[in-house]
Length: 436
Image (cartoon, rainbow, N blue to C red; front, side, top):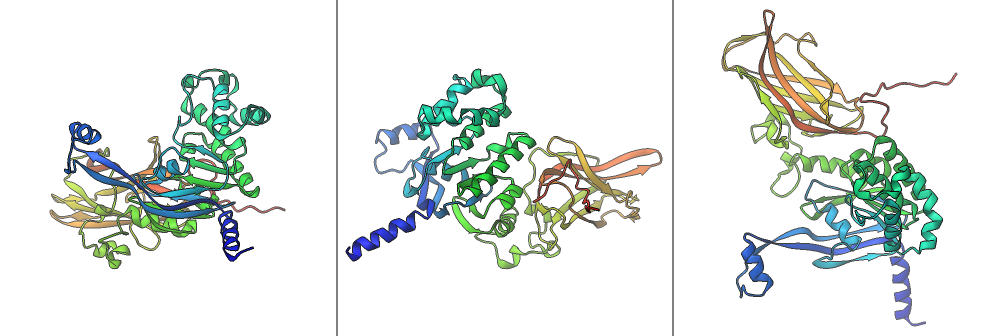
């Protein structure tokens, strides 16, 4: 055999180590200011004039996924996560670059992808299976497993347009994971299922990994990325920031979330201490909830706040069991005695989960003169379960028997708690178990 043939054989063997290979992929969209410009461009009537601006959803992205790996892709909204999954699965074509796939893919993208809403659940099982390349006989052989996993009963014979979102995702995931693909791709779909269904899905992920299957998952659930993935990839503005262990990439993602990574950010700012923040405002480092609720007479005003991790860095992503701090700066606009400063952490459904204030903690803030500022620091361990929460601040006081609200900021920022072990409810009892 010639050296050239030997080289080709080695290259084929090397490529077979990969389930997915993304090579220099870009996806560019043309954005028009006016519909008229779009029409002119479509019919070639724009001449040499450029009537659009280019938006790079992906910008020369490259990465590999090895066979048998579980790889997570994370990033803020608009980073390009879903776009690359759609290109990998053939839903979109890249503007530049190419993707190599080595194995049969089953994909669970956004809710509804690949389903005919007029068909029954049973008809959609056959439709999806055949789209992936299975025969009717092969789907029949898997039918009992699919129906048992979905667990939606007689609704499988009803049109899927009548399904709740929970029923829909149960069926979609049951199809995707039980037709025995070599590569499973999941895009945030598990966020719709209940906690018990999610638990069942992740048990299936473990089973897949033990059988040498490949999993590629996009999720904002950092706890799941850390627990179930071998490797993680961080995207930002269509580009790969880095790829490494989930722990390292999640730490990097925290910096992206608070603007402490990227172009124009000096090294000193990347690890900045809020006490010397050059921007002057701690809260400028956070994405503020546009729908937060604010009220009060502001005779004492909350003028700034910060969430700090165990190293003192700005963050909205906290590790379970790790210490963290909340800093609240207040300013008096008249002379006030004994103001009370509080924080509350609430679930996304609005349930107060935990919180405290200076009165509960027996801290007397004394008298504040007009124009005076004070900074209150709450330090504690994070013992909440891994999930997303909303953070609120308040400043109040008692005037005789009356309760006065100076300033409240409800649901001002979101917090993400990362946990590799969630117990029941919101709070971990940190039980120590012995067997006697």
